[in-house]
Amino acid sequence: MSIDIEKFIAENAKKDLLRFTTAGSVDDGKSTLIGRLLHDAKAIYEDQIVALKNDTQMEQMEIDFALLTDGLMAEREQGITIDVAYRYFSTPKRKFIIADTPGHEQYTRNMATGASTANLAIILIDARAGVKPQSKRHSYIASLLGISHFIVAVNKMDLVDYDEQVFDAIKAEYRQFAKKMGRIYIDFVPISALKGDNVVQSGGNMDWYRGSTVMEFLESSYISSGANLTDFRFPVQYIIDSTSDHIGYCGQIVSGVVKKGDMITVLPAKTSAKIRSIETFDGELDYAFAPQSVMLTLDSDIAVKRGDMLVHQTNIPVSSKKFSATVVWMDQAPIKANQSYLIKHTTNIIPVQVDNIQYKMNVNDLQEVSANELKLNEIGKIDFNVPVPLYFDNYSNNSGIGCFILIDPENNNTVGAGMINS
Image 1 (cartoon, rainbow, N blue to C red):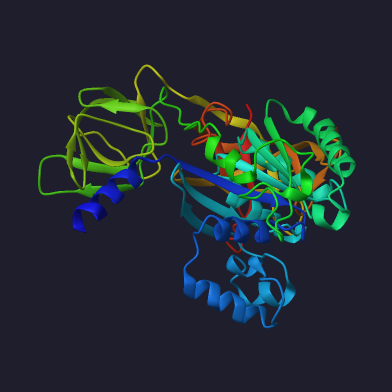
Image 2 (cartoon, rainbow, N blue to C red):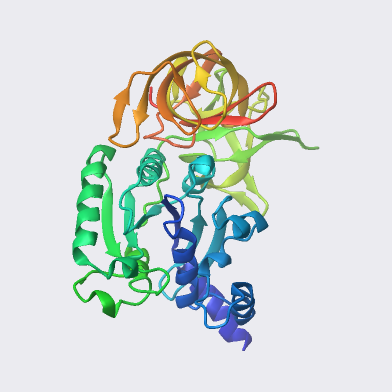
């Protein structure tokens, strides 16, 4: 038995991991789809099934699969997802981490959080309602965050009599919208999350559909690590002054590769030294790469503090007091020119001022609209300036140091998330 368990663990560890998120408008069936995926993939324990049937509270009534992910009392009372719910499951082919995100516009910030670490997005669309503004907003945010593979699941096909023409019309409408989102790959699948059609098993009610199920798409989708292994970037998070002659600088490698003996530069001081050692909890390494968390020691006693960044001497990021970024605004009070905030960029927090609102994005047609402010859940391009040079890469090349959050200095609330363009 112990040999079988060890063999199972070893084989499971070899499987690759796909992180995906659900997105779309409120009540399009995201939580129900996730519940159905877990149920039909046999990823739910028997006691969970019993509890689920008890929570449904009505005999002969179909199980409410949304209750598997909508765990908050407020979610169950209102029948909507509020917070991001993460679920893990595996199949013989692959491991998965799901981020079930809210569809309501009020919780757009939570959707962005769930999508920020995903490799793929499932966009749910209600077959009765078609492509809604929130479906477009979520799709656009996912594309901004670097997700390039979308599965558009046209849900509730059972409520439109499994009509192929309804599916084709939604498919055409979404394709027209998606043309403006850049280079993304889209798979379309008609489903009924409630009935299970084309979720894990093919649905006999839609024999006109010859494509893969949602699960088959998930198991076969190509996973790009997305890691930039070219540009070494190591923001210092914590400093350990040990009893030895060398101080340890701890943090996560955001991008790139570092080896013992590499010549590095400390920013912003621009002092240089060689990597003496690369240490982890399990011992020393000859080299390390993103996204490993390590402790680096140097061969020279130079000044390094939290918020500094270690980079290769011949590969320095862009340095500027002015930069532009695409911002998803998350606060009730709008953002306007000349307002001041704090910017958290990697492990560094400094003041930042808004120079100009270039435009906001109309999520319905992805057209740039002239604006002097961004309101809650709006997306736009903003020019900023900071009192000291910020070291960054463009988000499209290196998301790890091309992103930031904006903080209200009065209440310490996160009010916006940004992706640096230039």
